[in-house]
Amino acid sequence: MDRVFFSIGCVLGFLGVALGAFAAHALKARLAPELLATFETGVRYQLIHALALLAVAWAHSRWPGRVLGAGGWLFVAGTLLFSGSLYVLSLTGVRAWGAVTPFGGVAFLAGWLCLAWVPWRGRAA
Image (cartoon, rainbow, N blue to C red):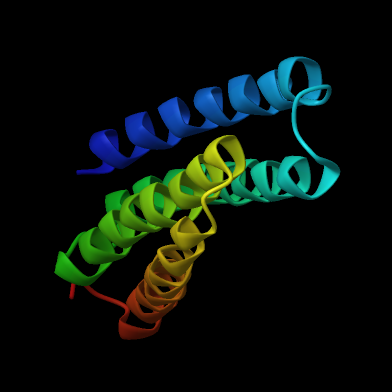
């Protein structure tokens, strides 16, 4: 599982950099400033959670278990829901996509709690 989360983290990091460059160069002239800022928020959270997945991969090599695995998948789901909804909202202007974003935020929060819980247990959970 550590290889899976490490690989997903690297892919999300790569895509985050690519999307950030896309926003800075291709979208800057096409989107209203508030929509561009929304897109950039999605990129920022994607990059942060790409790094979080690298942390999950490292932690999984030390404390493997279901809780940590759940945390990693929550980071993946959070990225898809949070960042993905912000990308779609920015590109389409459809504000209804903003209703999806909090579900991604909750997934991120739950993922961080899982990541924090495992070392306190001191063994696989």
